[in-house]
Amino acid sequence: MRELKRVLVTGGAGFVGLTLCERLLAEGAHVLSVDDLSTSAPGAESTLTRRPGYRFVHHDISTPLHPSWLAGGFDTVFHLASPASPVDYLRLPIHTLRAGAFGTATALDIAERCGARLVLTSTSEVYGDPAEHPQNEMYWGNVNPIGVRSVYDEAKRFAEALTFAYRRARSTDTGVARIFNTYGPRMRPDDGRMVPTFCRQALRGEPITVTGDGLQTRSLCYVDDTVAGLIALARSDYPGPVNIGNPDELTVLATAELIRELAGSRSPIEHVAESPDDPQRRCPEITVAAEHLGWRPRVPYREGLAQTVSWFRAHIGAMRAV
Ligand code: NAD
Image: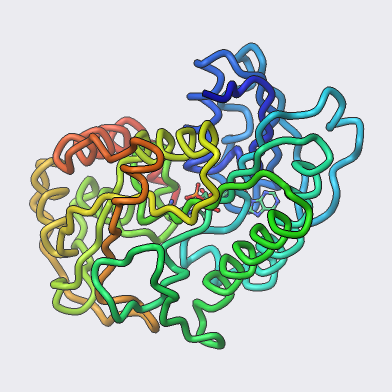
């Protein structure tokens, strides 16, 4: 099994990035986190600064890193840097496309120069509004190339294409993970994604806003499981793409009701208009992850959502400012 000793994490101050860095540090790795703080939570860059082996550099990965940061090299590069929530990528459309294109090229160039393995965090959004259920890695997707969400979907599709081009043309060691909806502590309460929105609304006693009739499904993976999948991919030789997600589907309405119960809230459910290009159904087929990485999600919804609600409850002071 590969050792992860000197690791570069782009987007390391983000929701998934922080949990990944924390796990790597706990396993004894030296971690350089590169983040431009464009979509991270306030103060996220200082969360891990006291941990031995951790360094942080404030930098937009769409431009090359100063060579002094590359001294000593890396054995692994995790490329996470990209706005990820619809609120963020609709606010930062060009930044998102640049992160997918130039940012991925920067990360691949570093991996190539160091002889490191690069793990790209792609997304289930490459499947668009899928015409097949569940989605396996052979499905090519149903994406509107000029819709409002295309800045993210196409950025990630390009990032995947570039990663496979480096692998084929330059023998760069790469692995592509397609992450499905991930949730957990450290999400920004205002990032617009379903779980933090429902937690915030439930804990404040405000109406919980469910889009449409709420019968559209989501499959939610707890962040610790997602991070375990990314590390398993980094330790393997598998090129991917590999779906990292939870195949247990839950309707949006059922998610709202469960979060309301876990928060001990009396918030009413309020149905609101659906957003454009919002997929009706997303569900990963994870046979590839099980066979090639020995990975599958472990944390059940009730347990993961309870952890998440209690994290948001503990951070309710910061949330009041949102
Ligand atoms: P996030 O927005 O919390 O974290 C992304 C981080 O990248 C932020 O800290 C942001 O400041 C940083 N960043 C953005 N552009 C950058 C740039 N040009 N240079 C340097 N840093 C930059 O999002 P997240 O949920 O942690 O997602 C992490 C990765 O996982 C993303 O690539 C995302 O596309 C992918 N992903 C996440 C999910 C999910 O449900 N969380 C699902 C699918 C894919």
